Image (cartoon, rainbow, N blue to C red):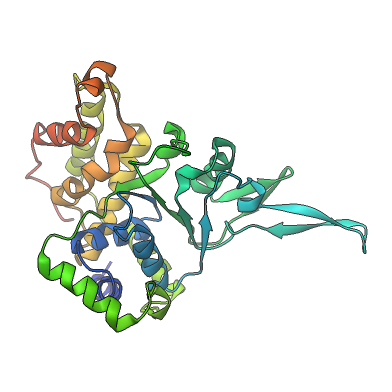
Length: 326
């Protein structure tokens, strides 16, 4: 990859972040991590308290990158066919016609995904892993790119269905939007609401890149970012250490290591580099691995946090200093 390629890619990434931050107030590093996940073609689970902008952020991202998106409000009465579609008998020509569901899009916004039963949640498993769905024994390839941005509320458990570990493992990142940090940001949110004169301004955000340009970013991240052997060993050591930690019952899957590598390459591209550094890896360790780890029951009962375990793992592994850009 040429320097011009990385420079153009960095400028495009900055335009996307600026477009989102023109509406979304607060955690700017969060926007970069969301963009990195999108460039890595990974699914993202936003988990945080109500009213912190999870759904708004997902909609803004979809609007800014010029890709088609569909929103599904996950409810207890939602059926698998409501997501993937179904074949319906047409009496006029005595044949079955395929009606595609909302999963046939670029970005699927799965709002409050834990409010729908496991059978319906499972309808997304094939789509998230293989980018295809099977309807009555026939496979249908999904659009390119395709990834899921899902939201869930972690504190309200009544009427919810926790995501199974198999589905959690398919999310590249689990992120939290968090509260804004300062009074100025709180005031900015209130002031912008007066200026917008509506609660949801996401439709006013114009795409700053086309679908083809965003796919070019994905292609560059996948094919043009160099990863030195010592970086691969660093990622491997982190993954293995999560399985060997004294507080852990089940550590990260190999998919966790692949996700950490992919999103690290995407972050290198966002920063205008064509090589991965240890800092790229450390940036995503918690959000990539924490939801893939199950603690020992004793530690869980005592209030141990998987996020702390991941940070402990990363801090205990020497950072490689002899990696080479090329």
